[in-house]
Amino acid sequence: MANGKAGPPKGSKNAFKGNEWSKSLKRAMARLSASEGDAQVSWRRGLDKAADKVVAAACEGQKDAWQEIANRIEGKPGQSVVLSGDPHNPIGFIERRTIKPDK
Image 1 (cartoon, rainbow, N blue to C red):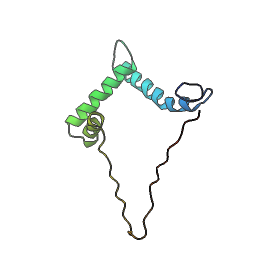
Image 2: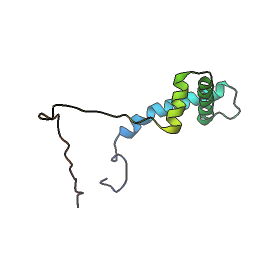
Image 3: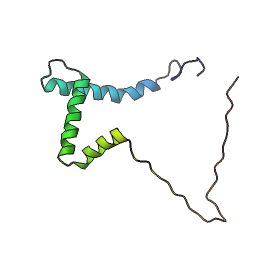
Image 4: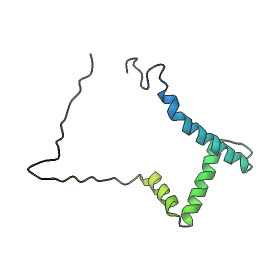
């Protein structure tokens, strides 16, 4: 945050790279909206149509569809990690570090 603003530094192309997939999905959803005869074509209408199809698939018992709905509404379940090892020869340790801001 050298310039006092959040986000990538001026001239960085990293933000652009991440948006390409989102832009492509929005265009595809707009095409879906247009192909189904919507008077007002928009990616949000296409997204609504895709969501309708996911809900319909979930109602038909498709596991992936109802799991997607549950993950979006309730959030994905937490994953636990269990580490074990010889008590006399530990796997590792956790060190806490505090980073002081530049003045």
